[in-house]
Image (cartoon, rainbow, N blue to C red):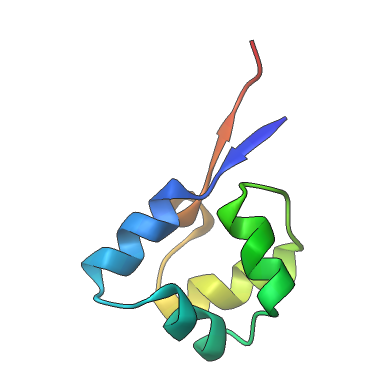
Length: 68
């Protein structure tokens, strides 16, 4: 299973937010931000908080990439 959070990083640029801004606003731990940057799975509750801050849905911040 592969997950990509590239959509979230692009959305941050569009909203003129930094990763640090998102981390503080959504109360995300630094080690969890590292997981997000590495496209590793994170808790759904964390993604919910990110969606609240960014005013979007899960599909706007992540995508599932099937393994070949």
